[in-house]
Structures are given as structure tokens and as C-alpha cells.
Image 1 (spheres, rainbow, N blue to C red):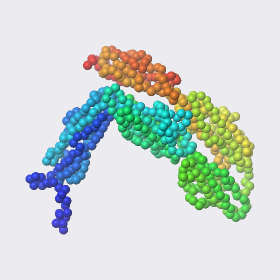
Image 2 (cartoon, helix red, strand yellow):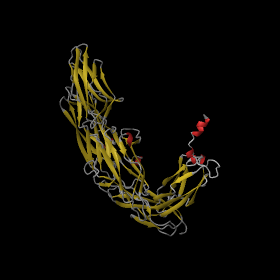
Image 3 (cartoon, helix red, strand yellow):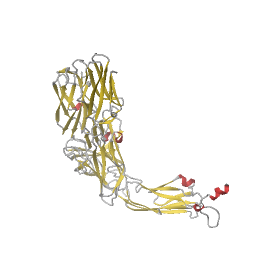
Image 4 (cartoon, one colour):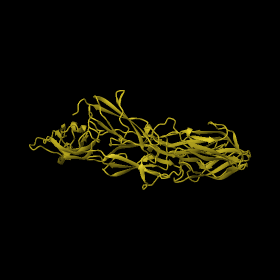
Length: 607
């Protein structure tokens, strides 16, 4: 038996030494030349060298060193190579290049051009290892130019040919139709003065929060139904690449906002030192499910079993029904098909059809309730009557959403409350609640100078009341969403909700960016600065910066105020650390919310 085991060893996989001294290790390293190509000075590139153990004994890498500019190259060796790589196995050595490791955020701090080096690998094979040549060309990083589709009087959903302009926001609007809405962000790699490489998008994330959530926690967009098609990629110089951002038909109900100042929005991380993080606001809203039925659930007060066909259509947001309840026990329901699951516009079905039964033990009038549930939440409720149970009030509002589009002005919309039953509809309370800034909305109802209010208005059967709802934005937000809540005496639907969705074109603050265009600073040499990369803010139609407020400090002491211009300069009179600040004002009157600062070390003597 031992002899059979020995014969089963695959001798063809073993390697012997020339002098017959036994099995020896041997390593194959590929590629022999690692060409990184063009690498921007603000980027980091990693490539891999595959190591295959092709000998008859484990291969051990004893040491690794670099020849050339060791400050730019680094490496990482798989631990198994030091412990011993078994015959036939493969591992790797990763080599990383950082063309400008000392000042990676300054594209002019390091020279451009060829970079070379040699990775020297020492192992225990007869060849004693290998020499791997390393090559790259350092180039300047491209400038990132970002553009988004223009709404042009409406949403740019699913319009890949839509005209593009600077990105003010990605606005998916109100998802009342619950169809897929695709928008895009177009990024272009633009050249600089000098040899320029591509634009690296190293990470993309989309974070939003629900304005209905009092905690305001940021959520990954994918968890609510907002997706981005790519998370990292490279754009060659002069090329353009589009990020597709989409909402799904099953977008979770809520008002989803991503505000860059809160760490949210679409965040694109690049190797452009002027724009290392491009943050774009996000807005999307999906209304709650809204089941309506034209089928009255009315039975006779007679002993025996009666059946009524019932159907309810969901004209609101998508719902995933998990249970159907009916009470009291004299009422029941059945269906030829499973009524549970997804129901809503643009889904496989939008209607629930049931047979409702009433097993009457006597002729006593009764009332019951049919409920649709999504988890623990009741998403629809319908009243059931058997016999004359009195004049039942039915209160309904229309429309269920009011949309506003303003440019700093005031707009008024009207909602109608109708008394559709045989009893009068009584308004108990009226309020405007979150998720958004409720102070921007107001109503014109007697007795409702402040909210919430209790006007005790009575609307007779088959009549209606019109309520004027005004919107006037008093801040720089571009989107406000709230709810008009009307509490009534309707037993089936006591609270009527109207979504208030407003879009304003506010005067956004400019974002200052300081760029130093002169050489290293020293006493007596002018320091030249430019604010040309600053973002003007303004309205979505465009903005212009009209005031540049420069300031220079040594510590807490203001030593010099350069001229008010996009390009400026000053000459330091002593050495030390200078702090330059910049604030901006644009043509529609908005000031930058925070000053840009640049810390400049000033040497005593010039090189």
C-alpha cells in the first residue's frame, strides 16, 4: 500500500537540481516590466506582479528592495511568499506609485515626466530572484468639469439628449407616476497648462435623509431606491463620462434630500486638487400609498350570508401588502388570487379585488372596517355597513399634492375639502407639519392665524370648502416639502393629507477657492493669488461674482488687504506663516458662507 501511494505522487511537477541534490525551489515573476503609463501627480496607482512557484520545493522571498526614487515607489509582499509558497501556487507583490508623495494635493509641487525604478527581489531559488523594471510618466491631473441636465420647464428624467449646464442639483421631483427616472452627471477631463493626464474618479457615493425622520440620519441611496451606476473609473484627457443616477418604481415613500453641507448628496471624489470632492444636492420624493374604491361596502340587515364584490385601486405610492384585516367577526373576505404583495402604479398590478361576506346572525345594524397593512402600518381603511347606521360623513381632499415653482416670489394654490357622504364633514384641526420647512407655507382660513388651529368648520353633505395654501421661501433652500393635515370626523379616514411640494430658485452663496500662481514665498517676493476657480453661486440661470474680499494675517494681526479683484498679489515684509482668507459676494446678493483660507510659509531669503 505504501508503494502505491509513492507512485501516485505527480513527479512531472517537481524540479531537481542539476547535481541531483534533491528538490529545489524556482520562481517565475511576471511581468518583467511594470509600465504604469501616465499617472497624474495627485494620484496613486497600484499594479501587481504575479509570483508562481514552479519548482519542487516551497519558494521563499528573502528580501525586496527598490532602486531609483524610493520615495515615489512602495511595495507590499504577500505574507505567504515570506513563509514559503508551495509548488504550483501563485501569490503577488503589489507595487504602488505616488508621483508626488510629499505634496499630493499640489499639482505643481513635483516635476512631470518619466519616472523609473527597479524592484529587486531576492529568493532562495538557484537564480536568487529577479529584477523587475518599473516605468511611468508623471503628468498633471485633469481639471474636472461637471454638468447636469437642464430641467427646461420640467424634469429631465430619461432624457439622455437633454441640454446640460452646471450642476445646481439633481431633482427627481415627485414620483407620482412611480416610473424609473434616470438623470445623469457628465464629467469631463479638461487640460491644464502642461502635460496633463486623465481624471480619476476614485469613489462615488450617494447619501440622503428622509425629511420625515426627526433624527435626520443619512442613508445609502441604494437602501431607499436611488442608485448610481458606477463607483470608480478613469476619464482620458478630453473625454467625457456620464454617471447615471436613477430612482426605481419602488422608491420608498418619503422626501429624500441629500444636502452637501450635511455630508449628503451625490459625492464624487476625484484627483483634481481644486475639486477633490464634487458634491451635488439630491431631491426625490415618493408619496405614500393611496387606495381608493368606488365600490360601497353596504349590506342589508337580514339574517343569513351576503357577499359583495369589492375592488380598491392604488393611485399613490407603491405598497407591499403583508396582511388584510376585517372586523368584527361577522365580516370576512376571500379572493381567487393572492391579494398580498406589491400593488401600485407601473407595477405588475395596481388593484386589489376581494369578495366580502357578511354572516348576519340577526337583523341588528352593524358597522365594520376593512384594512390593508404593510408590516405594522395601515395603508388603507374602508368602512363596512350593514343596515341603517346613521348618516356617515365622508371627507375627501383634492388634489392630494400641491406643487409650487417660484423664484423668490409668493405663490398660492387651492385645495378642496369635499363632504361626499350623507353626514356633514366637520374640520376639527388644521396643521402644516414636516418633513420640511413649515414656516414657508401658510393657509387662509378663519380662526387659523397660527397653526395648529381648531376652526370647527362644518361642511354640509355634498358641499365643499376651498382652502388657500401659500408658499414664500425665506431662505436659500431650493426645495421645501411639508404636509397639510386636516383632522375631520370621517370615521374611515379621519386625517386628510395633502403633500406640499415647492421648488424655489434661490440666490445660492458663492464658494471661494484660492489658488497660488507664484513661486515659493519669501520676504520681498510678491505672492500672486487667483480666485478664478471659485464657484459663483447665484440662481440656476447663472451667477457672477461681484466682490472679492481678500485678507492677509500674521497670526491674529491683519497686515495687508489686497485689492478687490479676481487676481491679486502682496509682498511679505517678514518671514513666518501667512494666512490668506477670501470671501465672495455674487450679483444676487449672497455672501459666501465660509471663507477660503490658504496657509503660506514665508522664508527669510529667496532661493
